[in-house]
Length: 378
Image (cartoon, rainbow, N blue to C red; front, side, top):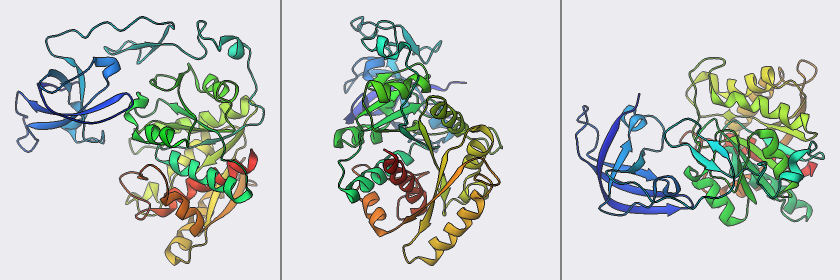
């Protein structure tokens, strides 16, 4: 189940909050001679202790050996033959990545030891806060870009946006350069990691307390709920991690928020089940979400016939989700060159399933449109 390797750190590369890139020379060759003897690795120093050039490290290379989409990384489990120094014990008893060798204990915003416990103990209402729910992590910067553009158009200040990161993809928020870059640029006010995810500015037990913390602790104007980088799918109707988007819609409505469903759309994915509106969105919003949400459909106005044709296909697919056939509310929103320019100006790179804004524009325009609509609801 786990493929292990050990080696020596040859290079120490880029670092961002919570993460450190390395190049590690492996001690033992792979069974497959086509795999490299030096691998790109990622360490989370808060879990493993600091890692320096020349250090010997133990690696988990399971996904790398299988060629899976982990960003091409091996992951440092810890120093080989040494024990990291104890970190200073702090408050909190929430255990994330529970019952795994790298389980971590954190202070939850909803923890009894938290200064915010009294605020959240009986909290039950988001006060109508709009919450955009998305399948993929790559939608996050596009949603925020759309919300900021909508505010700019009306002369309002940019909305305060909280990101609630669920545990369907990466568990450590530190893995996401997107989160680090958006926070640094002031595009998001906080990252709240919920469920088994950890490493956010705030930790919470559930999507529900994460949303309440976004509103009542962070003071967010709107929130975005999506899984961390990476997602799991099996090519089956129900076997994909993004199915949790439907549960998130239910949580938002239960707490008196305004759920906005961001569609996973693609004009470039070679897989038929993801062409136009992905079956992930159709299943999560059509079968799992049991309460009405605003389903935002982008209507291209970019002078691009192929994009316009794709937009018409998307509108036809969405008919099963919205009234009168479905329970959701249809919101058609024209997307134009101004939104595309706002997306291109993102402080972080836009990439979905390895495709850029230029390669798959409607994927990002759809997410941006959801952000525009959410800001209108603030």
